[in-house]
Structure formats: C-alpha cells, structure tokens
Image (cartoon, rainbow, N blue to C red; front, side, top):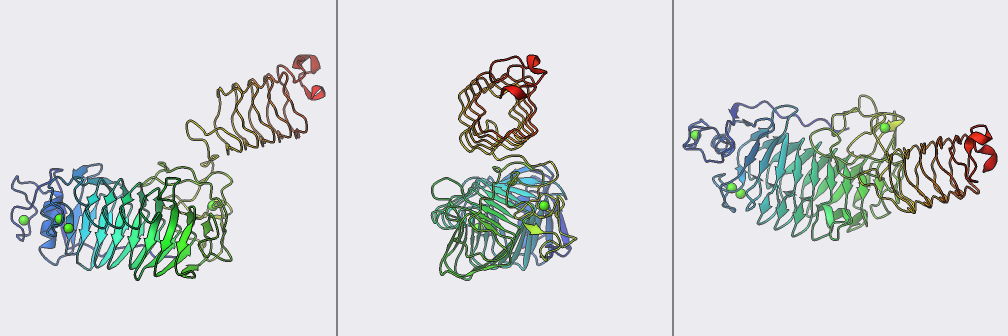
Length: 481
Ligand SMILES: [Ca+2]
Ligand SMILES: [Ca+2]
Ligand SMILES: [Ca+2]
Ligand SMILES: [Ca+2]
C-alpha cells in the first residue's frame, strides 16, 4: 500500500485575490503584488521563485484563472506557462477545486527546478505546449499531483497532459482525459519514476496510439488506476513501454491492444490487474482477456470524473478482502468513497458503492442492439417497436410502460425485469430467461415464448400470448403459454 503524498508545511503563503493575469511588479521584495495592487496567480509564482522558502499559493474555490499573457518558451513565469523554479505548493482550498486555463499558446505549468512541488485541487485545461507536456512538464525535482482533472490539453511533443522527462512525479486521485499529443503518450509520457495512485487515464490521443507511455529510464508504478484507450483511431493502447519498467497493482488496462511492451517482460505484476487481452504480460492473480465493463467517463463524485464499473464487471471485488492488497484500513478511492465494499476491493480508481452501479448501456439514449448490456437500466416508457435485443441482458431493468411491439428478445436474459404495462404484441421471446420478470398488465398478444425460462415469472398480463384475456384465466396467463 502506498503512503499518502503529504508535503511539509509551507514557509510563506500567498493568497491569490484576483483572476486577472498580471506579473509581479517588484519580484524579490517578498510581496505578491501586481502593478494594479492585486496578488495574481502569476505574481505569486514569480515571488515564490524569488527565494528558497517553501511557498504556498492559495487559489479560490471554483475560481477560473486564465493565463492570458502569451509567450511560450519563456522560463521565468513572466509569460505563457507558470514556471516553477523553487518549491511551490499550488492548491485550491481543501475539498474544493480551482481552474487554470492556458491561453492556447503554451502549457500551464513548467517544473524547472526545486526539490518538491505540489499541485492540488486543480482543473487544468486548454494548455497548448509547443513541445512536451500539454498541461504539465516536469524536468526536475519531485512533483505531487493530487485531486487534479487535466483535460483538453495538447502537446506539440510528448505527453498530451503530462510529460515527466526528469525528476519524479506522484499522481494521485487524478483524471487525465481527452488530451492530445503530437508525439508519444496521449495522456502521460514518462522517462523517470512515475507513480499513478488511483488515477484515471482515458480517451487521450497520441501519435504512438497510447494513453500512458514509458520510455528512457521509465519506472511506472501504477496502483489501483484505470487506464483506458478509446475506440478513436490513434488512442487505443492503454500502456506503452519502449524502455524501462512498469509495476502494476490492482490496475485496469483497457485497450486494443491493452499494452505495447518492448522489450517484453518489463512489466512486473503484483496482482489484482485486469487487461482486455494478453499483451500486458500479467500473471497469476490477474485477469487477462477480460472486459472490465466500464461506464463512460462521468461525474461520480470527487474532484474529477471517473469511469464506474458496471454491474457484472470483473473489476468489482476483484481483490479479496483480507488479501495483502485489500487489508483494512484501505485508503478511500479516488473520489473519497470507502474501499473494501462488498466481497472485496475493486480494481481500478474507484470502488462501486452499494446500489450505485447499473448496466453498461444506461447512458441516454441507451445503446439498443443485439447483446446490449442493460442490467438495472431504467428503460421505462421506451418506444422501440421492432428493436433487436436478441441476446441482450435486461436483468433487473425497468421496462415498464414500454412499446416493444414485434421486438426481438430471443435468447435475452431478463431476470427480475419489470415489464409492467408494456406492449409486447408480436414480440419474439424464444429461449429468453424471464425468471422473476413481472408482466403485470402487459399486452403479450402474439408473443412467442417457446423455450423461455419462466421460473417465478409474474403473468398477470392484460392480454396473454394466445390473445385471451388474462382475467378469463384467473388473472394469469400461466395456462396459455
Ligand atoms: Ca513582489
Ligand atoms: Ca516555460
Ligand atoms: Ca513561462
Ligand atoms: Ca468491492
């Protein structure tokens, strides 16, 4: 289990009191003050760089700071990115977030020097670096990144959101999504020691087709993270290693292929990992060739969006309670929700809470088609005549007051589904598992139920499949199926 990343106390604190981007008027006087008399984010960083004190820069909750002084390729924080050259903590108030947007001509934060930097409670977007690191470039030192959401950044070089070409970086309870790199590493590019602790990396796009790329002397240590490529061309590999090593624990690697490792054998598994195929070099205690069944990136609470495992996901309870990777007290998940819920700890960045999860196609509108995973989905009032849901999973779904006339539900699993007051006239339910499903007040005239499993099915339909009135059969169609 990794220890929390707790920095030492700051020696000087600057409270940013304006969102206007302006330089410090007199760098080195120990006072954060622009010509206009305010303490701007940029002025605070410039003054922090001016001496060796540990500087904390406090941002306001929910405020948005736009870096509006163009000028990339500058390393004194006067223009473009915020350059950190002495130990700086840049943070929102506890439990809150603040947004820093770049002007679209440079990255957001450039860590050039200093022993330890800490970036906490930040949303970082619209960075556009001419070179590496669309949002953050780490060249030196130890950098902690916690409760951060880095999205919609672009690098002209490597690392769409983060490039760590020197020093060490610890990323915790953070989401890196929808960033773009013109070179390797759509989300993260790393050449040194890089911790990923409960990090979600999703749907970034890099020229090497990878979400996280390790190269050089990379030592990527991923713990309880969710790394997922997308179906977008050029972004489908979760983890790429061209050199260095990766240590993987309780991590989800979803991609096509999941991994691109050269040379092979440079992945060390500590168990509890899930990969969508066999390319990651996983072993005993892992699940390979397994779909993790993740919902799309969404606000599931916490500082950044995450991907919630769907009901039936192999990520849920993948690590048994009491095993050495799920021993109380287990730290909270990336959202601050408790771990070890249910029969074990879940693989990936978040732990599914009781009653929280649904089937995987419950987004609006749900994806309806053969084999659709619609467990626990709310499909009440759905109007979909002739829809083909053959082989779909509708277990515990709410399909009340729906119009599914002539629908194809052959071979579907609809255990405990709620079909009350639905129209299923002419529907095909051949071989479907309808155990415990409720067809009260439904219209089943002409429906074909041959071979269906009907254990505990409630058949108080209005019209039975043979066209008879349910009331003429004692309130049930049981004798007319
Ligand atoms: Ca000053
Ligand atoms: Ca710079
Ligand atoms: Ca700069
Ligand atoms: Ca669990």
